[in-house]
Image (cartoon, rainbow, N blue to C red; front, side, top):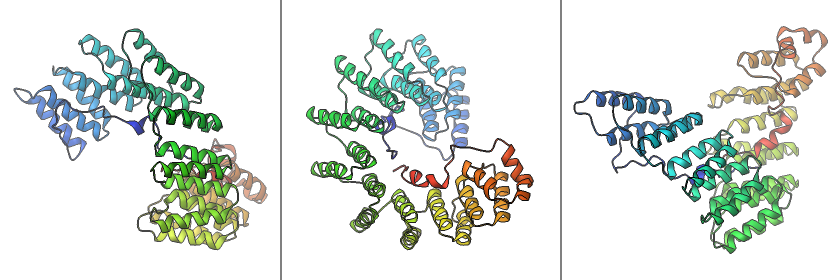
Length: 447
């Protein structure tokens, strides 16, 4: 399913809001740490709020290790912690994947007589969910409820989102009921997570029931809600149903975006209705919304696979001419694969070599696709040269490459050292994208 930008991050509240409206910024992490060291040497020292602002600036720069280092130095120097600086420490632990240390921050807050707040709790819950400890997160919420603390809607929604992404949507639905019993009203983010979870579990009828209940409760769906449903209907091959959702979306005053149109395009492609997909692509372009790279990739991949070489080339050229967009690595891989399948291996090789010059370094899939092309077109020497280059860069052969080597290489060339290294070494990775899977990859985008 298309990856939507919906997650607990999509409803992020500011967990590092300073206790004062003033904030400080630095050109680099080193500059911030230099300033921090100077502050420690001052007599009298600046207030804890000032230290907190500096640590916050490191967090904003995503320098989480440096922020944690500064927090510990503060503590050792006798600068007292407050709820704000402890919240920053907790966030650093979670961002560094050390959620286990996050509990120590809550213990420290308790020892200092500092009551942890919704932001600290939701930060820890989010950290647990992101490392796959959703059940532990749910148990933590249950435990603090017993202690008399009522989590807010934000905290519950993080757990619902984590449960749905872990394939436990039914548990998420149960938690939604419990929220209401606890006097905490779910919001659009909670419903979006559940609708998404139901859709990726092929429970689209239940997703629509939940959608209707959401509307009945006067919780207005947003663009994410409609995009999730449009995509789900399209993946089921029901483009007509997707268009009904699209009509509802427009009637409620929400404009379709690239995610909406990409899902519809992909829906048409899955039904082999390429003319409709192409017409939609041109409609988007003429309307001013402008297709994004994901849209280009979806259409180009299907055109190549349908043998519509001229149109596929034209789409690639149009993207290359667009000053606002750049072909990504998947764009190149799709084009190289299409050229190879249509016998234009030399042209594919030239494009492969242009990738680096266009600031798009080839990845494992790029090498595998071009190697497939040379093997299919009986050029084993060039294939072996590329295999050597691929291995030297730390990339691996996929299962298709390995099968083609065994099937198509002359027996005497199977003894080549680099080929033997691939055949006998731990280089096969079945999870890597092979050329036949590019169409699936084309629909995966961060839109």
